Image 1 (tube, rainbow, N blue to C red):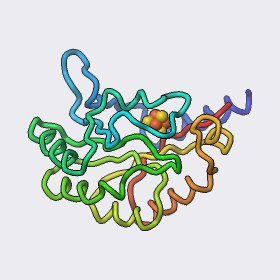
Image 2: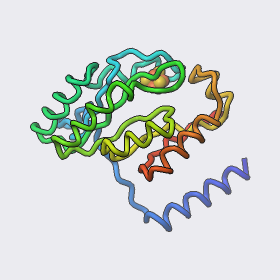
Image 3: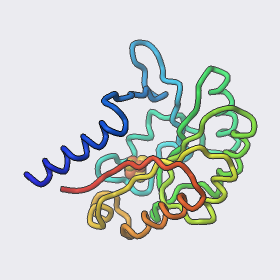
Image 4: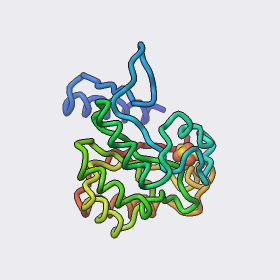
Length: 190
Ligand code: SF4
């Protein structure tokens, strides 16, 4: 425990040195706070369905999101969000058993969104190969959020996938090679 405390103290000091002692909080678009909705909506391209059914979520995260389950609906939804004043959106959805999302079906629609709006587009990536990373960069996606899961056992037990950390490392490499900004979500198991 002492070792962990020391590590936490070092991490805190490194963070303060680099980013100062301020914390920015963002208000996601699917939640209302003091009567106001956030201006960065989350959109699910699979509605409320997800093949993984992770222990901590069971697809509940997808329920309050805007559901846009066809490429045409996604384009229209994003254009409507910009008209109402949103600044960007997170495009996500339920993952397939192999840890991927339906980017092959939706990548052209996302390109159209970037060409016809000024929205900042984040996606929740999942497992991404080098070809898809290139397509994402070309389509103009601004950043990729990625679950960086701490160990193989957590992946199998909690996320119900049959691959290990190597797939996440490959995804990080694919995105880094095309200079895609990455937002890691760090997860692990005690
Ligand atoms: S993959 Fe995402 S949406 Fe699906 S159950 Fe896991 S955390 Fe929830």
